[in-house]
Length: 394
Image 1 (cartoon, rainbow, N blue to C red):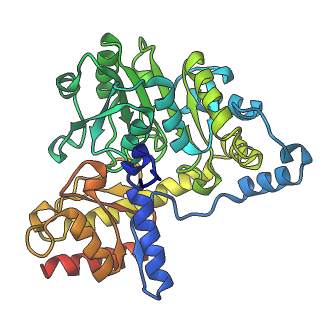
Image 2: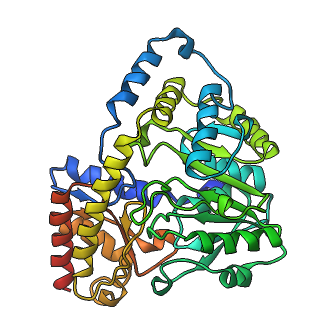
C-alpha cells in the first residue's frame, strides 16, 4: 500500500498566481533575459529612511530580541487604533486590534475566527487571488459575485441579495480593489453595509489600499459609512502606503471577541510579529506622512500613462482605475487564435514579449489581465509597447 504524503486540503490549494508570475520573472532574469514585471503587487520605492532608522534603533535594543505580546506591541496597537480613526473614520480601542504578519495573515485569521465548515462567503469578482485559498483552509465556501467593466467592477445590493443563502456568513468588501482599482463611493458603501446589517452578514473590509486613491483623499470606509453596522472586521497594514511589503506588518480591527479569537490563533501559528518590524510600523504610522503623498502622486502619473497606453492597443478595452496601482484591461477581443485564453496570453506575453502580467483567471475574471503600474515610467513605456507589438501581430 502506498503511504499518503500530502493532505487533500493542501493538494487542492493552488499556489499564489501573483507570486508564481513574480518567481517565473526572476528565473528568466537569472537566465539573462531582460524582463519587465507588471506582476508584483508592491511599490517599487524604498521604505522611507525615517522608518528604516527606527528599525535600526529597535534592532540594537536587547528588549526586542525576545518574544513579545501575541496581540502586538501596545504602542503599535494604540497607533493602529488612532490610524483607523483618522483614515477610516472608525473609533476603536487598542484591545480591538491584533497586529499580524502582513494583511494576508490578517485575512486568513479573520476567516479562521468567523467561518465554520460549510459557511458561505460572498466574494465580489474580480477578487484578490488569496481570498479563496484562505476560505478553503478555513473550511468555508467561496461564492463569487460577478461584476462587469460596464458598471465599473462594482457589485450592487441586488447582486449580493441574489447570491445570498441561509448559509451566507460574510462578505469580503474591498475598496479600492485589487485587481481592478475600483473605489466604492460613500453612498454605495452605505447601501451595501445596511444590506449586510439587515441580513446578519459579517463585513470583512480590506482597506489596504485606502490611501492610494486619485479622485479623493482617502477611500470611504464601509464601516464609517454605515453607522448601524455592528458585525465588521477591518483589515489593513503598512505594506502598500509606506512601501513596506517585505516588513510583514498588518492588522485586524474588530469586536473584541473576534480579536481575542484571532490572537489565540496567532499564539499557536506565529506567536508575535517580529519586534523590529513592529517598531518600523510604529514609526510609519506616527511619523511624517509626506512620503505617502509623494508616492501617491507618482502612482497617479503612472496610472494615467499606463491606462492611456493600454487603452490604445487595438482590441483592448480598459476601465480607468480610481485606486490601488493596477489596470485591468479586457483582452477577450484579441483571444481565439494563437492564444485562446487570457492565461495563455499572459504566458505568451512573458515568454515572447518579456513582460510579466497576471491573467484574469487568477482573479475569477477570465478574459482580463492585471498590470501593475508600481514601476518606473520607462518600464511602463517599454513594457506596454512590447505587449502592444505582440498583440498587434495576432
